[in-house]
Amino acid sequence: MSALEITETGEHVEVRLNRPEKRNAIDQTMVDELHAVCADLERRPRPMLLTGGDDGVFAAGADIAQLRDRTSADALRAINAGIFDRMRRLPLPTVAAIDGPALGGGAELAYACDIRICTTRAFFGQPEARLGIIAGAGATWRLPRLVGESLAKELLFTGRRMLAEEALSARLVSSVVEPGELLDAARAMIARIAKASPMALRLTKLAVDAPEGAHPQVELAAQAFLFDDDEKHRRMTEFLTKKS
Image (cartoon, rainbow, N blue to C red):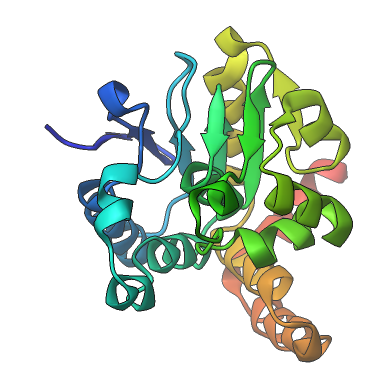
């Protein structure tokens, strides 16, 4: 059985985590299938909607049975960190639709997406230290950037669960909706994103994710490229025509 359900739409790809019997725990099969999705989106860029569905579980973490048996050599292979980094570098935006628990590696999977929307019953947590390891797939550096250093350290040190309203207040998620509204809200977000120029989206994402020392040069280079792009001329001409 596949660890993912993939649905192609006219403007985006929907990826649904599909290990309900394991509460969508991230195992090697899921990692391999996510790599295949990324390879496709690198070849043919489209926005991606990632979800565990609206049935009360996003991802309850990495598969502990596999994690327990991994060695130092496995840790250095960056199994989960590698796929999350690849997802973060996808050309076009990614939206995570989160219902229920997003814990450990499941939370780090959500952090790797560009935008997060969750339900009222969603919650986030990093219990790794209680299991004798660290949050080694992005939380130690992505989470401070998302919610600030102090709150991130508290969550990483204590394993405390952050509920949906706190996640919204901390700006970890952009909105909180009822469970039955989750996928519609995420699809609406994707639809708004898809109205923009694909190349402008790609270069905006590169600029936002560029290291601090790259600014403002990265914006200047991106804007110079876009100013000579036919798509920019067409869109601005249409805007001026409608305005007149």
